[in-house]
Amino acid sequence: MATGLNTFPPGFEALVIGGSRGIGQALVAALRARGAGRVWAASRSPAHGAGVADGVEPLVVDATDEASLAAAAAQVKAAGATLSLVVHTPGLLQDARLRPERRLADIQREALQRSFAVNAFAPILAAKAFVPLLQHGGPAVYASLSARVGSIGDNRLGGWYAYRAAKAAQNQLIHTLAIETARRSRALICCTLHPGTVDTELSRPFQSGVAAERLFTPDEAAGHLLKVIDGLGPDQHGRCIAWDGQTVPW
Image 1 (spheres, rainbow, N blue to C red):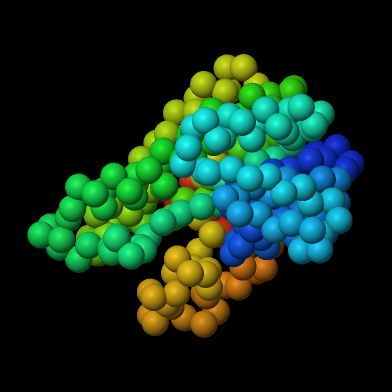
Image 2 (cartoon, rainbow, N blue to C red):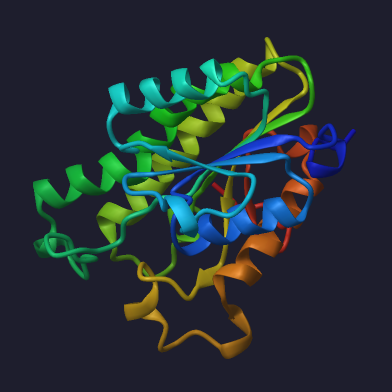
């Protein structure tokens, strides 16, 4: 039996971590269009006032800080929310201190730690905070955005040590979460999702070799991801699923 948007109750509630820009922002808008009654848009600096659409609830959270995530979950619970869907979207490939490594000599401890903090630790800490709010007995999904480059079996090019390893760790952590939750909440699906190459700040420096038809706008990516979530079932529990519905190998 599928567990997805079509099985959620009318006016279901959802939470998008990283919901103020990029894929996260597009997911918030798409969920509202799909009939979500209230969507919590969580980020460090969410939009407020006139910039917030009807039915969207801003939530301030530092996605890498365990105490901040716990406080945000307490706020959602205190508001009487019954969540059907939580999507964790933040990821980090490069910034002022971090660049994808081309060779072994480029590896730096600080870069490894920073990549793991955002790409691996943050999704499982978010799960620790919010998965209890999904364990209500009804259909529910916890999904975090991963990447195909985290696949060990699909790695044919090498390089990008920190990002690849952190994404592989993310997949393992969510897979382990799925094993635990299966014992307690049979209606809850936990998985990671590969959105493809999306025209966002994360991928912009690396788009030159991407075919035009495989470079998605955030809105297109959100549509793909919600279609995948629509079709989730027991066979996808604990797996990494690509934007086109295919399972990404470990």
